[in-house]
Amino acid sequence: MNTIPASQLAEILGVNVAAGNPAARVSAGVSTDTRTIPVGSAFFALRGERFDGHGFCDAALTAGATALVVDTWSGESPANAAVIVVKDTLAALQRLAFWWRSQLQIPVIGITGSNGKTSTKDFTAAILSKRFKVSATKGNLNNHIGVPLTVLGTAADCGAAVWEMGMNHSGEIAPLCEIARPKIGIITNIGTAHIEFLGSREGIAEEKGMLARSLPADGSLFVPAGCDFYDYFRQRTKAHVIPVGNGRGLIRAENLEVGDGFSRFTLVIEGEAPADVLLPVGGRHMVTNALLAAGAAWKLGLSPAEIAAGLSRTPLPGGR
Image (cartoon, rainbow, N blue to C red; front, side, top):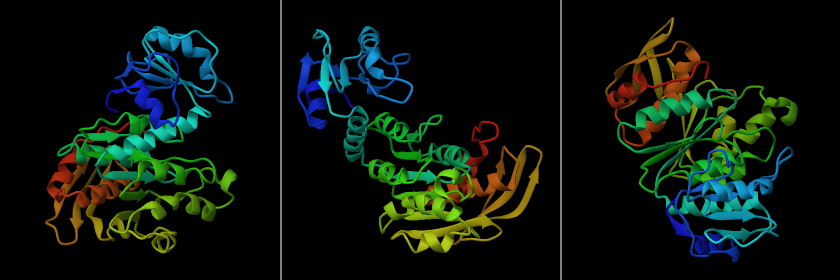
């Protein structure tokens, strides 16, 4: 997020500065954690089941925060920071992220699925980094708090974004899509993770499918070929649905060889020159994730050769 005065931050959130210095400059984005807060940040005091950020406002000021976003305030007026009182600090964080996303004129790739989100994100970011400055989800920042923080941590000069969207319960993906506004979507698979909350794989597909519903008519959705819910997603999106897979799909792997710690294949994209790929990881599921990433990168103009080079140097955490 760009540097803005606290008075503008308050205006974006629909309120006025309640105390402190309205001219204080928010120059280091936002934070919800005083252990890692940079000097010049706006500290959002979130409330949770096991924590209350309002108890850390003094620590945030000591660490150099220049704005506090709270839902109540009875303390002294800080000299070098502004206090902004809102009804709901989480809603305010999401509102700010929605605003900042509107300032970013970049293509966003949204990734969801029961498994493989992180490796697919890593593959995609590695490919795109050959051409763009990329904003990518860090760690597990893929929920109702993490996605806004990821958006707000995206620099104005980024050229593309790759953001994960996770969920545990029904109704969680759609608000993330409203904030992120992806043009390209990837659904890695529909498994049984969180089935205890959604009742069935169909319920999981419905929730994950909110990403498909959010895509524009000129967007693209990449799904594994043979996915049980391919037709379901195709019927629920305006975007072009593109299947990828091992030996089948518009984007596919041919001549596949999977070994201990590597996967080798020929990347075939209809209408393009094929390219040989050497992944630094084994497993057919990893090949599928790489193909999903390849499709997204191809839609952003990268050639199979560029994609192959990016895939070959993807740093992957173990087991992701």
